[in-house]
Length: 210
Image (cartoon, rainbow, N blue to C red):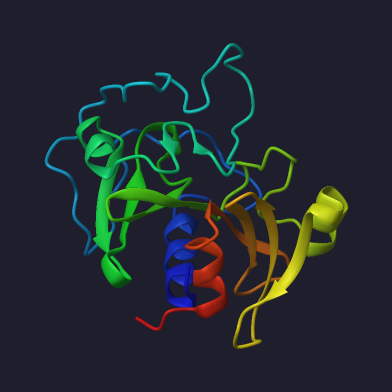
């Protein structure tokens, strides 16, 4: 995600949380649509085939904490089809990005918590500027890079972008990554995103200008 996208997404999520370290509770299913973006014609709350209904992380234990992993978040799985999610009422708004990428907002309990990016109609990035969600290892927005290093050890590494003017903490899981980038106005992690390395990591390192 480039600098402009990070600032836009961080600002958008900041509207629904007073502090990045805490979330007051699940947002209503019909989240406000930001100015300049498009809301789907149909927003019924039907289920997506193959995914649990109810809380986004619903499973055998319905009180399990919210997780954002390289698989995605709840029904928002990496590789999911935008048209299918839209038809199921999982998408609240969309906005065009660079090179055919489409940015989108979630509905239900994930509204205002995560932001989505689709490439060629498939979900390639889920990101958040709030806490929770956390990673499966327990990392989240608001932590320092030093705390991330304590959590991940040799699995993670602090990296720089190609321009050398930004740092991020990267954790690889095969062809996918967890990426923790800095906050624009305070020390520590301001944005946590997951997805394929050829999209998430590449965007951070190269920072497309559009």
